[in-house]
Length: 368
View 1 (cartoon, rainbow, N blue to C red):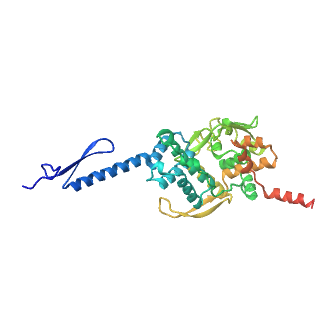
View 2 (view 1 turned 120 degrees about the vertical axis):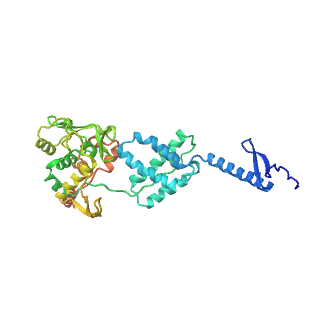
């Protein structure tokens, strides 16, 4: 009968016993003592790896998912759309990494890559903000101890200039303010309201007798459906004067029920698709739209894709330009446009027009 090896059990396996780093004694079995010791060493390595991972915090994608689930209910549809894209971009870039392993230089490198992709300045800022919110959630709710995104300066992306329509387009629109889309254009041009604010207007918000229009709410679209919410900022709650061209256009509509929405003509605001289709049809009829390729809808037949040349937001810029032409004081312009920051009014919503440049040229010619 063969002599039993040290630690060998009745079933022939060799047992070794060790006290582990957590203080517990563990038993390891193998066909030989070397195999049992190898299992012990493998367990030590696994425990060390687990300790490192625990010290490095949870995986980024798990924290991001938790943050997203608790953040969604409080977000307005418009913010939800922009945050979702940034959330997905962050998860795509940092998945598989532990929170404490992500350093400021990693965030900086990510932002540089985004800038190299040609992202717009606002999109860059949004990406950085969402990453900051994810790390902030880790620190405040999950015991994290550092937010590397706070130490990184946001990079400026591609600046997208938003300008009013050309003079010719403005004159074309002024001559065609009929229909609900013409009314939308008139409101945008002469009040400077945001599209969502215009969509939320009811006839109860219109006081033609006193010549003011009350802005207290806005429409945002979630999955095409209109959602009534508060305005973008506190300053956006305001009363805007009704200028004479708009007063004349509103008077053409006749007396309407107070609860009827100005642009939809019903007791419900337009859906996103209704607005998009009707505005496109309006612009096409005025020659203010262009073909931009083809697409294949559900029926399989290729159709022309059209894009409008003029948006309601551009008409908002036109109104800001009118305020500038009239030399309205800057503080009054800010209140009229509903800007939270007067620098937005000063830096973004002031534009020169060809007619102004001609006048300036004539004035300069008289003194040279």
